Image 1 (cartoon, rainbow over the protein chains, first blue to last red):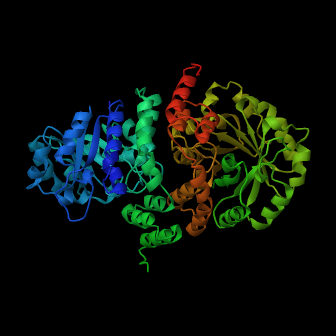
Image 2 (image 1 turned 180 degrees about the vertical axis):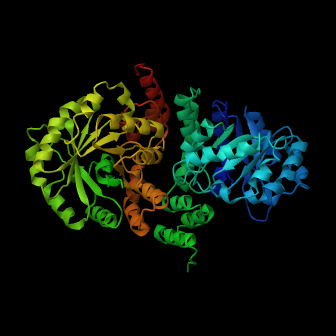
Image 3 (image 1 turned 45 degrees about the vertical axis):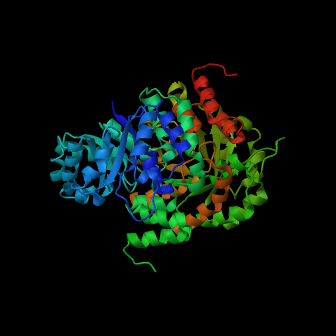
Length: 313
Length: 313
């Protein structure tokens, strides 16, 4: 049976700068205790930075200890490969020992090779390791991916296909899993984005094609157009795979993020759709949409220019 | 090449009681003039009723004439089979002659046989005719469907598969089209709902399997969880089928319904997801959700009871 990882706080943090109300977090954690989710990813684990970020960008030990007491799930944190080196990963992660079960590494396909030493070090400290490899819709252009995949066996616990642009289709998921399977026995994960409202069907395609773990967030809270909605995945799996779901607990989890949805209004829209269909970075789109300085029309024009490599004024 | 029908005013009318601001309608019609949509469905055509309904529930001739002048598209109206008989269809439709191109009939699969006389009469008055047959996810239980399908050739211009519960999957669409094709040469249409965020992929499945016409609405405005979003369909077809799309016009169409989305907040949520996965009537769910008298939890419980045939208190 495949597993589900809920990363609402980590991916939702892009909208709240990783600040969440403690009572809200506790309701979320307690609701998830009653739902068929294996892992909860709480946030990033990072060295101190100059810019202000909230608690779940750092996941301090006191908060990990507090949540460990509340939760009956395995806990996960994520690192940005470009910000952490194998040398200092001990300092960063040793304090989480016994609190965190899984450490994920967000990495570009270009840097996958470099991240293997980091993954090995994290395993040595005693965690499960996942490599979350981004920009899946652009992998066909990555010649060195097969070589790197061959090195994963026995090193990483999960190899994640991350559809950063929300631009892949179910058939792409099927083909990519087949390609990955040719080169590694590592367990496969899928993390979908919802630019084209394909996060559910892509995730079902991943599951049908043997994925071992899939990600979702409550109300789809997440960067840009957002993620697969945990409540949608569980509702569908309830009828499609006879997965037991406590809908009262699910309703509580949803209710607790509803005010944030009203405030931040994540979800897809025309600019995110265009970034999805053309594999253009939604980080730029998100900045433009959330600051509300530009009309949708000018954003669409800028994206079309970016697609056509015309520099905008 | 398949055709697109936009039914924003007709399906969106469930949220506004078919009242729309004239300036808003005009912006919508003028934006669609610049988009690759073949038909615009304006609303219902109905005999006077006791309850109050807005203009687009009746589509009076003066409004049809006004829009005919504004629009370069074919215009459509829809009738409810259960409210119109072949005897009085002349009175109802003769005044629309030269203004409306396509008349659609919303009909249950049980009543499809009875609706054929109505379809024949509408053809005689001089319109294209579509039969919009509802509850697609329950068709496998309809034994007389093949017999009725055999009578469609030369009678109806389009036979529409309507996923009323938003509960079908792409594979179901493929299989249902194959079943329909066994019995009739009539052109096939698909009208999807978005309870499970499958409206896009189901519509793409319909197109890939030879559907001749598909429906969408701006911002997915429509009954319950809403429809396939016109802007999503066009964005995807722009890259997938090289369909020319004027994104400024598309942005204008979206902007003009955005205030209504803010007000009525259609879209999917846990109760609609459960109604989708279990093929339960979303009309009931919509009443419960929009009146806000019940918590999501009690709605979910009521739906689960309905599924299990337990009477609720």
